[in-house]
Amino acid sequence: MVMLKRLAWSDAAWARSVFLLAPVLAHWWRYYKELPPSLDILIQTLDTAQKTKELNDFSVIATWGRYENKLYLVNITRSKWEMPDLERMAIAEYNKWRPQKVLIEDKSSGTALIQNLRRNQSLPIVAVDVNTDKVTRVQEVVGFIESGYCHLPEYAEWLSDFLLEHGRFPNGAHDDQVDTSSMAIKELMGFNGGGT
Image (cartoon, rainbow, N blue to C red; front, side, top):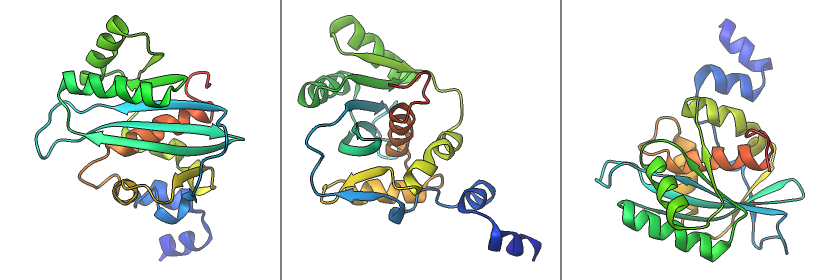
């Protein structure tokens, strides 16, 4: 009963931190039909999977932009690629969107991808050293989503999978898109080791 009374007057952030219920609800996101005419900055965030089996996570390449302190998810490319194909796809997505930065989580297959791209390409790679767990990383940025800073394309073919994965986190089958979102929001809102 005391917990219920506390919930009656507490804020949503406190409830999320105590119960870890679906931390990113679909109605918190804002939606857009068209991107702003020009984005202040465009980045890509990559979350790479170690294996391509059916139950393993996907690899994801997310393209995000910022315009007047609002964030826009431009595109998601998601599949189960082995390293040579993942490297080709990372290069293709970079060439398609020309982001100012390409952030890749520096662990396991991400480390190999960083090394290969730096050795063979001239992409603006930023190795992201992650030193907190996934739930903590989402909690660090969920306030920006809830406050209306983050916009999604209204009619993207991947939108329902994106929303479902975020809504089920941390208990869903996959969290690869969630990882790219937290990495991008942290970078674009300027608290990822110096910001943009």
